[in-house]
Length: 507
Image 1 (cartoon, rainbow, N blue to C red):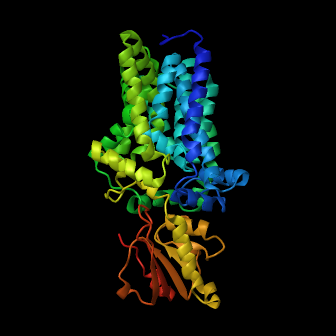
Image 2: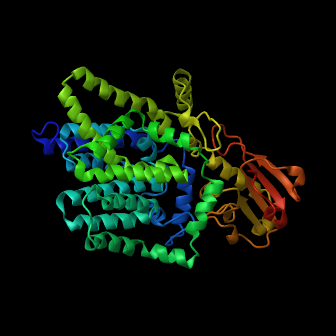
Image 3: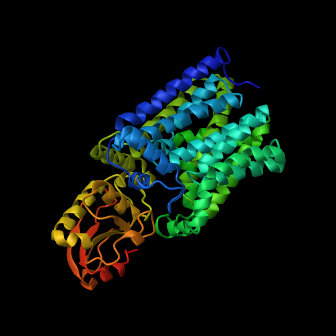
């Protein structure tokens, strides 16, 4: 069954998708150089300088992509974010294509593209050099190829699905969980069941692609397993189930209405019955993530197909009602929600204007969710903005402390940090000016790689420590950078390695 206008539908679809691709680029490209490098981006730049088949943080895809892009475009902030932005735009276009694949017309394509374009969650994750944007695109491609196989029965789509899954696992293993949920839903009878031969089209290319990383995992005693525990201890927020549910339901703004409609439509519509497994797999996936108390953005890749289905249903409803005011109110709701939220997720404003805007929104709406940090505090800016600020200042101050030592003593000095964020910043902005930097907490910047018997140690701590109980303390330098996550950090200069090894960062 075909929904929406069908006159020149294919041509209209192409035009609509191109327009929204350009709009996506227009939202991000002029502002990609603002605020500063995100802490994770600095980590991946450092990883790209030491290419390997795996890292303590995960698979090698992100470091390889970063290396390629740095070779092509350099490591400026704007250039580094260009490729992720292009992938974010591709995700918008792919959502429009899924509408057509599910039987929607050009009006439904318009609804899906505008909804995902202005979804605050996808605006926030669609421009930084991080695995998340590639993960979302990979998940959406898995949905696309599996739907196309169910519709057409061409095993080439299963092969493409396997390639996508293999590349996705070289980025983040979470795509394997999504694929398992999709296939599990298929095997329950909620869609076309796959034969053993058809499964091989998925499994073989996937395993071949991810095999080098699996070998690396074996050779390095499966750091992926230990890293999960360390992330849970040091970096993941401990969010209760009710808060996770609220984040899942409301983090998509007014665009989330289209997602909700899409989920219901997939589960109960007779016209989309062959694709009911998509809705069931989504519910199964959310249940797993809730049990794991995982961050909500981990499952965002499962949402584009919901947008596609929801747009089809919404287009049909608006067509049947034939009430222009209702249609206008719907689009105004989506656009207004996205525009109002945009300064909270994309650096479209200068920092002082962003702070003023968020303060106005907080006072008039009472919404503080975007300002909640992982430690439970409420900042003046979202935490992902705070993680873009102050890193260059931290590195410069660390270099100054290092240069305060006599030149003859610098060779016997090491730099230790609380975490990979600080280590990445010092490695990037202090390159060739300080010794190799290591993180006390487990990360790519391993403490095992530093000088075994230094005479001096520079410690970069996230928070002040008890200076009276620090043997060998020579000096301390506090970092002041309002609204930055690095604000309040302290740089200690300590003599004798024993003092540094005994150091434990404050919890």
